[in-house]
Image 1: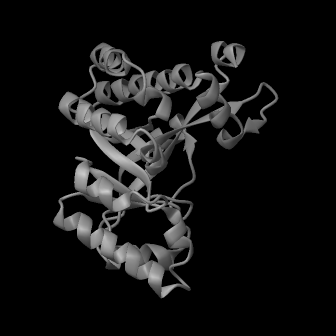
Image 2 (image 1 turned 90 degrees about the vertical axis):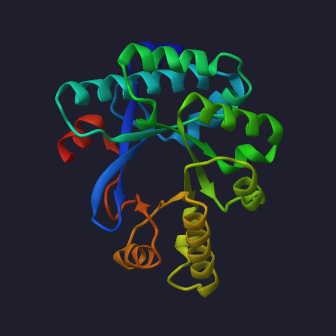
Amino acid sequence: MEDALLKGEFQVYLQPKYYLPTGEIVGAEALVRWVEPSGKIIPPDNFIPLFERNGFIIQVDFYVYEQVMKRMQKWKQEGRRPICVSVNVSRVHVRTYDFFQRLNELIEKFQIPKEYFELELTETIMGSAQGMTKDFIQECKKQGYKVSIDDFGSGYSSLNLLKDLPVDILKIDKGFLDETAESERSSIIVEQVVEMAKKMKIGTLCEGVETLKQAEFLKGIGCDMAQGYLFSKPIPMEEFEKMI
């Protein structure tokens, strides 16, 4: 893994986020891929859990953050309109003391406005050490970063999260969308989450959108954004650049 990092085998892909009312690309999620010299791509599910256990995720994540900011700096210099990019924050970062110091140093180095660099935490992180996670999210906001909760609705702490945490975006778990065509209950839940978020001035994004029917449903209930294979799979940064 050390060798792979030095050789640039970890590559950053971006998956576009679309604003449903207009169909415009308004952001992207940064995802890491391990591409071996042979061209074989090792799926994240095969290495992220291991890296979270052995701590190497910290190095990989900060590598991703730096690559994203480097690209954002390039866009800024070219005079492109600002695009908000979200990056994943591992549970390991929540327990480290220097996360914000290191992140702010990168922000300063590349001169990226903090509001365009979104920190994304999965809801499952909230399952343990809730107090620590709550403090971490509050610190994100204090530092000036946007915060999104990924896989919202996949755990059991969803409503408590909304009550206690100052989040900006809810990413609705795609499990609900998988069933929207068949399950009236799932449709009702998604609709109510979107409505509740609107009242709380929280943005909503649904991931895993694969069909036009799903996109029309989400647009109809007022969901703000969507990402998924209907629009685009995760793509290399150069390809994303051409799209915008």
